[in-house]
Image 1 (cartoon, rainbow over the protein chains, first blue to last red):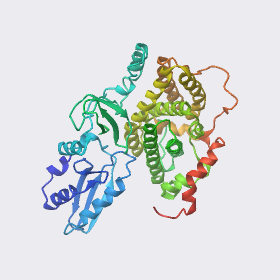
Image 2: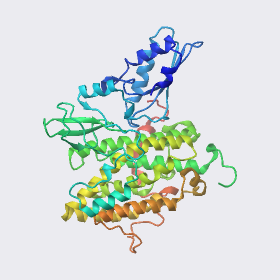
Image 3: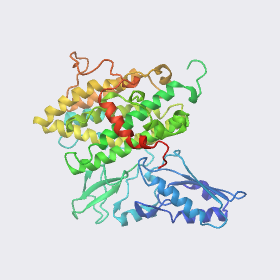
Image 4: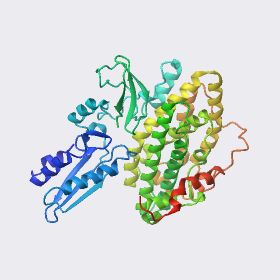
Amino acid sequence: MHGRQAKATPEPGVRAVWEALREVVDPEIPVVSVVDLGMVQEVTIDPDEAAVRVELLPTFLGCPALGLIRQAIVDRLQQLPQVARVDVEIVYDPPWSTDRISEEGRRKLAQFGISPPRRCGSMPVPSNGSSTPTASATSTASKSVHTSHASTRSAASTGSALCPFCGSDNTRLDNGFGPTPCRSIWYCLDCRNPFEQMKSL
Amino acid sequence: MKGQPASPQTDRGLVDLLYQLADDELVIGHRASEWTGVAPHIEEDVAFSSIAQDEVSHAALFYRLLADLGEGGGDPDRIAFGRPPEAFRNAILLEQLNGDWADEIARHFLYSEYEAVLLPRLERSPHRPLAEAARLIAREESYHRAHFRRWLERLAQAGGEARGRIQRSLRRAYWLAAGLFEPGPAEEETVRWRGCSIDDLRKEWDQAVIRYCAALDLVLPTGSPGVPDEVPDPLGGRRGVHSPAMRALVDELTQVYRLDPSATW
């Protein structure tokens, strides 16, 4: 996702900024950085002004950490030599997605006890698990509901989550909502632990 | 498209649409927050707190778009908290006092289905910031819709009192939900920013909710006579006419802001 920077002429300054950004962590999940999360869209440097501009993609819109993260980026980058000004701009295009989280980020989430999000992929029509009535529904219900909403895009299809403790997929969604906007609560039927999953977006 | 489209800053149709969107989200978000601590079980306390947080953040984004068009002197807080009740454009369904659990599930179900038909239209709005916002919000709302569909099924399939209550609540909420589809004062101009007429949206929504409810053997009072007296006609929210519950809601919502409107947070 950071192709634009990778392809640009490797300015030592840009590299140093990216390294510094790897130290700015999510205050609610302090094992992952804003780079791991894929929140940084672009870094540009104006050498004449010694100004750094960072384009930051917000994750969940209700995430109260955004302001803190923004400030932490400014604070960290201002420690770099020859940086006079830091501008962090919040941009909504492209939309942030959990698919932007790096492999390393996913690994760190799992180690922290949060099951990484399912991949949304680039499928135009993700599976519509959310619109399927529960197992107790009548077959009529399930058929009708399926056809009426099959084309509706939905990030909320539940699927199943891998238990971050024992790796089992024999798990059950207990609550689509959790302690932060980005997490849901699950229960592992094998190791009998409750755990959280980062929701796919 | 006829003639030269007005620029976003001067187009009442766009501004009006954004007020409807923002006020709907703020008001339902506030009502959702009132469930914290009193929901039927602790997982729902968590869910409603999270849903409230989502809705209010969506409102904040829409208020930001309004501020960028020069509304409220460019200050989103002033738009959200500096207006009297009659300046709000939310549908009155959303401002109703919280009733019992079935009332809440019915209201949220109908509203999340409304968003599910509206947001894909907005994703193609010619006002690009609105299109980008809609794209982000739609993904989050899909979690709300899934939640309320599950609850609707659960109550409908439980039979007995639960089923009777959700049927009753759904009937009443459905009448009030008609207010989501009343035209605002600039509807003629709003159409192009929304991407469809309000009547087409209503048809799409009706089709979705009727079908979903029918699959659960829940009956909606479509086209049937006997709208209860308590349901005003027109419902009015889109033109700033609200039910008595709205004044208290706005009073509470704006209480802190009014202490010192110039304070920075």
